[in-house]
Image (cartoon, rainbow over all chains, first blue to last red; front, side):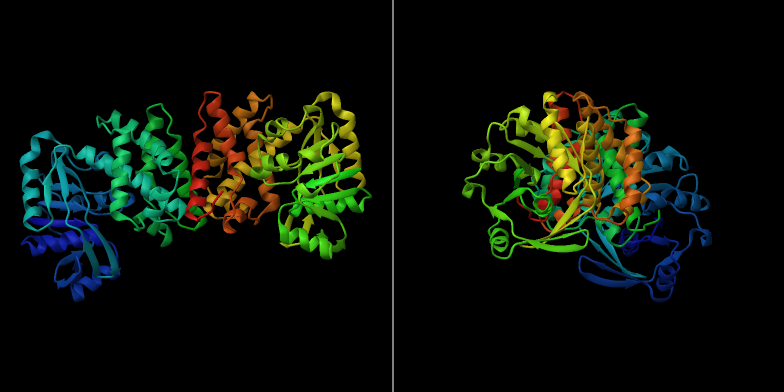
Length: 308
Length: 308
């Protein structure tokens, strides 16, 4: 399969590496000169679950790319999605599948402004990764990568992408309800990420506070109400228990948003609690918990001098 | 006047010092052995607006005191009020006036469980202070101290207390609406104290964030609604402008609650945003902004290992 990775940070490089090793023709797309030049000169170094390897792989800025692709995986930050969609227009054919595994809410709507519904594949992944230096990343986990076609008639094409990922060791899984998985993951990030960032603590410390049930209750209830308007049923109690299960598993880990603030990068709060607040308002009901959390995280960005 | 200071931290020592210098017979009450013993042995050292002085002053634990008093000023932390009222019962006569200048909401109700309404004087002060060491404090400002009798027939006794404070340089002022002043001060603390503590910033930094109006709006609206049920009109826009005025004046100052967390002491959040959340719930309406802020501050106390 001829594949592009649109946004070649830690996850993008991890996916690109696995897919090229699995026999596909992969091109990385990115905007960071130092990263691009290092990979052009020295190859891409990826450490997958502790095992290091270096490969030659095609990389460039979208504007330099003359090819078109069968499948494009988007791995930008949420706030970079729209810009990337603008930049890759010329690399798309009528049939190019666009796979979006980004965290957060509202991305399907953004993508549908640029890509016909029949070509959109939405999904989630629990692979994680980190960028160690330009050209050098690590990639961890065992998946799964759950995906589903946005157009119900397009299951076959999506199953081909699933099979390709399975063949590459990425644990691709066809999902019959990726919208539910996306919302539930947004609840994880809208609670743990937001609260750990605000309280400057790790997930274990957060879930040890006496107030955790009340804090989760306020946020998850609002996520659940908006999810319902999109046809997704997110039982509040069940979701809170699911969060506890995750917290027990990951323990002393600092979520990505905490690291964003620490490294003075803008957070993705607008695509989590912020999106719930905005959608609630649009539909005429209140989401004060999500609204205040979003304001507080943006206030913290301001205080730290982070420009979005 | 024969006066006791119930709770002899920085403010209690400052008031006690000024009143004794002004010719009254003052006894300090406290529970902290080292502080008590130092003052018994070496006297009380107070620096008032930069000018240091040391005086001999009576001090002891409430249980040691055999005297009764004309007037008792309460200067505990909010969470220590009830305990102190229990401990000073035997020092009260039928006519002992009890003056409460504590920050926060709900104190008049607590005091009325122990003291007849005719003897309760509620008030606010903008004097500030700090404890430098056992027996050594500083005291700053120029007042005013606004007070009002809880029972409308008791203005005369209150005016005597006002005159006494005026004579001692404490800038006592008779207020015809101390309830309003108390609520407005609670708004100051419920916004600046709570938000600076949560975001780990000073007042200038807080008021420079783009979200400050929205954050204040959420909190002040809820304070205003509960104030209304107590007959106090607190215009939201006017209050928000008042907050801005204060922020411009105090600038780079860290509010006391921020210092409480930094020094690992329990905060008074339950008597500010927490009281608004609780009163709202009791009256059947929601106060989600205050509720979440209270939960977050308590979560922060938990994370810092602060025991209340």
